[in-house]
Length: 136
Image (cartoon, rainbow, N blue to C red; front, side, top):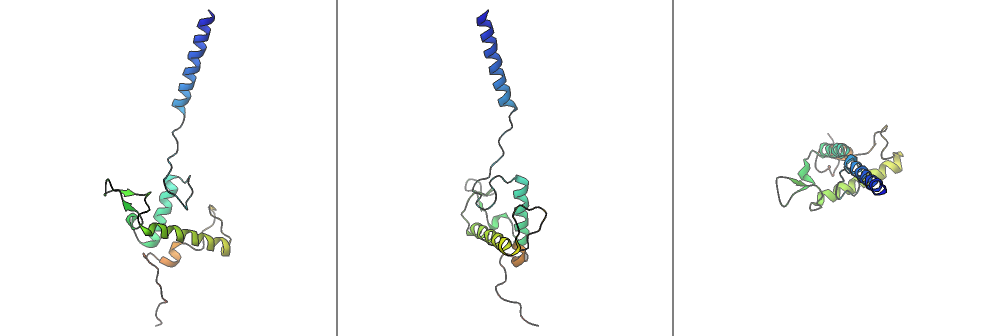
């Protein structure tokens, strides 16, 4: 009788563990090689940031991201092959420092709009103008 109870308890524990494993949520997708954006950024938030940067520079994904070596029709978002990607990181750090130092803007504040961003200088162009407009 004691053997049956132990077997039943062991069987129930195994079932409980298996049920827990089956019910657990799959891990959140983690993005590879994020250096300036939060490591736990959601897919939707990452897409939003990338869409804002694309619009501010008037470019597409392949401006900063290189194609995958095994399938050139797809992007290798983790790759650092293109220097434009590191430049984008540098510019992100620069605008964050400017906004924090001069405008007391805190990253992650969803109620405020950052005073300085990509559009401030780029105005929808890949490279900002390097000289003042000619006088009329």
